[in-house]
Amino acid sequence: MKTKNVLENLKQSIIDGTRKVTPSLAQKAIDLEVPPYTIVTDACAPAMAEVGDLYQQGEYFVPEILMSAKAFEAAMAIIEPLLRSKQVEYAGTVILGVCEGDIHSIGKNLVATMLEAGGYNVFDLGTDVPAKEFIVAAVKNNADIIVVSALMTTSMIGMKDIIRMVKEEELGVKVMVGGGPVNKEYADSIGANAYGRDAMDAVRVARNLMKTIRGS
Ligand code: B12
Image (cartoon, rainbow, N blue to C red; front, side, top):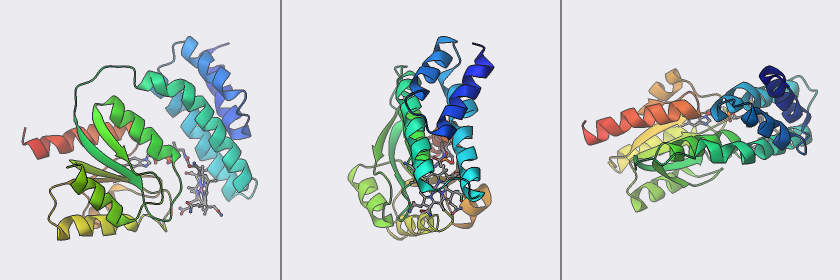
């Protein structure tokens, strides 16, 4: 089967939520030597975007989204080890989580994988995390960067609280924000140190932030 067909079939199987089929399609893409992150960007992530569109059009409801999310995770179980396979030098310590009231974990998990693959020690606080917990974890683990994800317009306001607390407590830690409804303008408006577009970008942005922290 050609690469394009395999990626299209994988995307469709995630949209259809057929999680028994997705791992073998992910494996086929790997066997065809498609770079692991390309499988994510060209099949898995666009599938979830389309699922979101189907939800918005009233064709999908929460149970269908959950089936697709499970199929996505089944594909990631095959792809993820390959994203992490290289030995890398320690790059910094990161606290990661999703804003309070928000249980979307898929993008955050991808960000965690890419940061770990980039040499970061990642403390993943999970989803639905109150602002204060980010602060407590940052202090406890002497973190360099707090990385915050939000997938809903209603939850992304939590980012503002985290940044306010970092300033109030005069912590040296930097704050990077990202996720569906977040953009550079919003990040700037709340005083975030950085905005990242996707999981790969998170690694580039973290590297730049580390330069400002270490002054090199
Ligand atoms: C899957 C999904 C769910 C699943 C989540 C399962 C899980 N384990 O995560 C379930 C079914 C639980 C769910 C529930 C709900 N959902 Co929902 N969901 C989605 C969906 C379809 C896909 C999200 C996803 O996983 N995408 C794939 C990943 C790879 O992409 P991503 O998360 O965007 O992450 C990428 C980037 O954003 C970035 N990124 C993410 N975080 C960060 C952080 C940093 C620092 C950086 C640099 C980058 C970064 O990197 C990733 C790519 O590399 C989206 C649709 C969409 N278009 O996003 C709706 C969507 C987010 N959901 C929505 C809604 C409304 C809900 C519900 C309220 C529905 C309901 N009526 O119950 C609930 C809310 C529950 C809650 N309190 O959180 C809306 C939000 C609207 C809004 N703007 O506020 C969306 C946009 C759907 C829509 N079009 O209306 N959902």
